[in-house]
Image 1 (cartoon, rainbow, N blue to C red):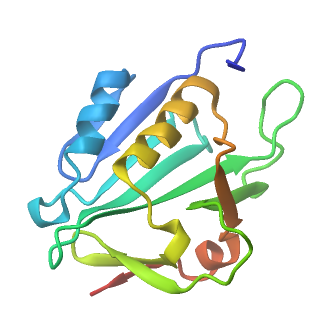
Image 2: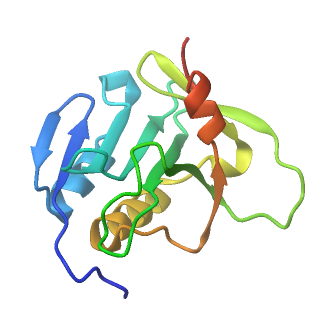
Length: 166
């Protein structure tokens, strides 16, 4: 495991639960398991507790129509200098996690959340287990798990974003 040589400070934001400063693994697991847009909790974000900090965020939960658990995870990573300071507030990647594919075309879909929807590709619909893996890796190392495919959605985020009212 490539843990960082220093301790990061985080804030966990839950749509229905407010903020938890310096969350531990249990806080994060409880928040992720509780995601249920029909109950008002369709979003969670784990962010570094600094200006322009990196973050990982998830939207989704059980689909209100089918009951199928569907999640979409995005990640912002700033370009950093050797002392770990950011290059600039605008110098970052914004990525969406997906299940690795064999290169075959993937379709478009959406994840329903609390009054919104997140547009994504079919391989970017993740399970709760996937979400936990990504959040824990971020908590421990501020890195991206290599078992996922990471697609840049920076242009979408810069224009309007991928959230729209249903």
